[in-house]
Amino acid sequence: MPYVQRNPDGSIESLHRHARPDAGEYLDAADPQIQAFLGWNAPTLNFEQLDASFVRVTEDLIDVLIAKHVIIITDLPPHAQAKLIARKRWREGVAAVAPRLFGESGFADIIDDTGFGKL
Image (cartoon, rainbow, N blue to C red; front, top):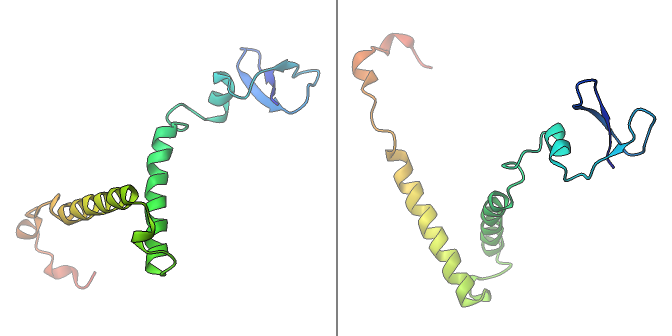
């Protein structure tokens, strides 16, 4: 796969696993035309972004294993412990600042919401 069927203007209309009379052209699955047809653009397949997201999953997994007493942090190599603790501190620091990112809007002073009742 994929054999492509093109419409009259030359753009891909459909993909097929096997050659057909109307779909005899073979393109590699990594071909940009195939990826564009499938809606897979470069940012979607950026492995650096995927790796960064997976690091968070791995951290959460380690936290769960520690919380369930499956492992203890000292089971990890010292270098891994240091990285894990540094990332945890950084995340806690960001979480502490996040609520202050949006200050008071002042709308409570302008709009009297006492007549709205319990929302």
